Image 1 (cartoon, one colour):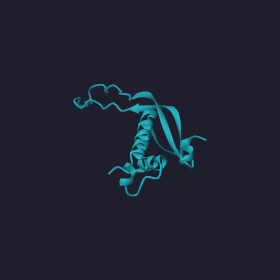
Image 2 (cartoon, one colour; image 1 turned 180 degrees about the horizontal axis):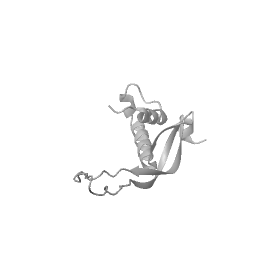
Image 3 (cartoon, one colour; image 1 turned 45 degrees about the horizontal axis):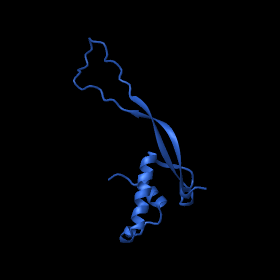
Image 4 (cartoon, one colour; image 1 turned 90 degrees about the horizontal axis):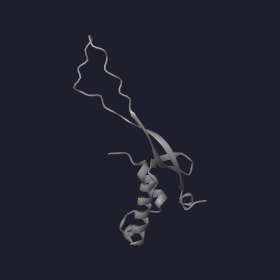
Length: 107
């Protein structure tokens, strides 16, 4: 069992296919007499991601493994410097803070 699993979550590193939308040019005016404009397909690319799962095994969110490492390092550095004492309520664990971050709704 990894340290992350003991903290209340686990993550899996996977390669996923992502789609990048390509907007249509806006300067073209459709015409009934001309042929339809060419079909513009989205760009598909692969990326390595960490899928962060809660204790029930459901994926709560994804981020790059590098971003996960940056967040974990920042959390533990702040804890060692005593910065967590200035936060109310005090953060319980990296896992709980990460799951909270992933579940936040954009304002």
